[in-house]
Image (cartoon, rainbow, N blue to C red; front, side, top):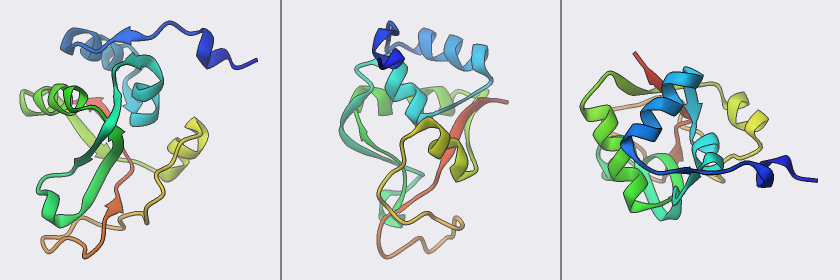
Length: 120
C-alpha cells in the first residue's frame, strides 16, 4: 500500500507554501510535488538565467514556478544547494547530470542543481 496516496494534498498558495516550509524547516522539490495539488506541470525551473542551463526542477507547473519565485524574491525564503542523498531518500531524482558548481558561464547542456527551499 502506498501511504503517499493516502495523504491529502495541500492547495498551492503562497500561504500554504510558507506554512509548509516553516513547519518542516527545509523542503525538497520532491516533497512539494508529492504534497501540493497543482505543483506538477510541464515546465522547467531554472536557477537564474535559463541560458546557463542550471535546472532546479522539471515537470513543474507555471503557477508553482511563479509562487516559488515570489517567495524567494520577497525573502526570507531561499533555495540552498543540498546533497543528492536528500532526493534519493525522497525517491525522486531528475535524469540530468548534476551541476558541480554554479559558474558565470553556465553549462553547454542542462544540469540539475539539487536544492531545498529554506527559511533563512
